[in-house]
Length: 238
Ligand code: ADP
Ligand code: MG
Image 1 (cartoon, rainbow, N blue to C red):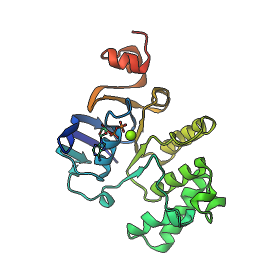
Image 2 (spheres, rainbow, N blue to C red; image 1 turned 180 degrees about the vertical axis):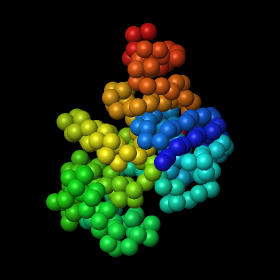
Image 3 (cartoon, rainbow, N blue to C red; image 1 turned 30 degrees about the horizontal axis):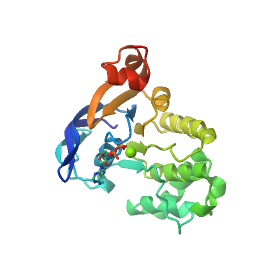
Image 4 (tube, helix red, strand yellow; image 1 turned 135 degrees about the vertical axis):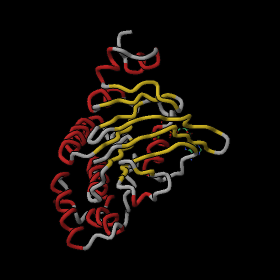
């Protein structure tokens, strides 16, 4: 079960406010897409949810528990970064094992989780390779696999397709949609691409300059955009 509540979340870097009070409810097993132009605060918000940066104001609650001061490793949340952030000197197996070991899992459990993740992500044949010996799409699958072995209640993905060429993008997009169905967890997916958002999301959160403009299903946003920004961004005929 993963039910998230964001209540008045603010973020400030020095004197610059980047998030101005984000209120949002995310339901169990939802695939929620944060969409908005570059610089609007999507990655910042994801990092706050993961616990990688401190919140400047507001509350983040997961399953009824206040998370503000809970360290990242104990939140049950895993993040897949835009840049993959794989360890270059470790092979694929070690990259996936690292985070799982930090959680204190024993060797057999780590092994069985990696076997399962490798099957799901078609990495079985690649476990001995170093990141430099992989294609962009394969690296992205390893980055997803590394998050998967932690069995997080909440999966965060920050622009996971942005470093892939066009041909691979739709493949990986479909894989992520399938992964969401298979693991049945809550997923937050960040993109600046409205097509990606419209095709993947149960619920879309449209952001603009550190604020939420509208929350709704793809259809609601398309048929009833709340304002001109949303209409223009989503491309609906208003
Ligand atoms: P997005 O992911 O939507 O493109 P970001 O969350 O990366 O946007 O950035 C939102 C704003 O916060 C931008 O203006 C960016 O320059 C600023 N910002 C992000 N991280 C930092 C940081 N560590 N220090 C200062 N400003 C930052
Ligand atoms: Mg970003």
